[in-house]
Image 1 (cartoon, helix red, strand yellow):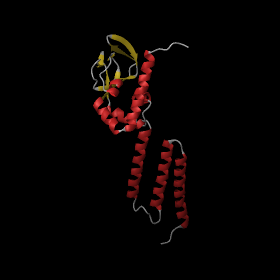
Image 2 (tube, one colour):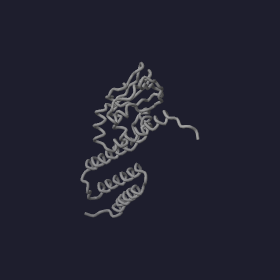
Image 3 (cartoon, one colour):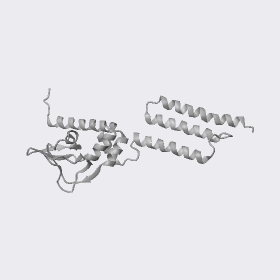
Image 4 (cartoon, helix red, strand yellow):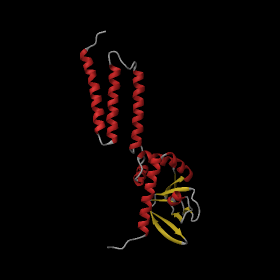
Length: 224
């Protein structure tokens, strides 16, 4: 069988372009850019093997399946590393969680239950073991400890000390009407964190940041 040498040389350009995209991708410091360039290089490789006069990939159906697998892998990577597909509220929450990657946030968000109070609502009771961990989206809520009431500022987590230590709650937390909040089952969240060490570390770091803010707000320092 005779081959059109010129056509074959044009096809080989796809291989060189594929190598160039992958090489540039590997040199990129941005992980999303790197993965996008490498995926482009893979597509060019597939095109070369499918378009050869004597194709190494025997049918377009096979090419379609391979491209589909590559795209599916790329989509999962994008979801793990970007906020693609998140609602405006979810993007706002993601920014507030700070220490989590988009993929970790999605896992946490799927596990949570979202509510909005219609009246004053006690979500945590002093001296009781909370069954849920909470994230309060409102800007004000009430904390009562040993009979002393104080106004706390949100958005903030509630119940994270009890969650981390396994102890009973040290205060009652009451939300005013119209406050949106998210609740996670402590048991379900603990199971998720046991399976995912990276998520556990990221959440622990976020709780530590939240606690530091609360301590700073409750213990004002004098001016130097």
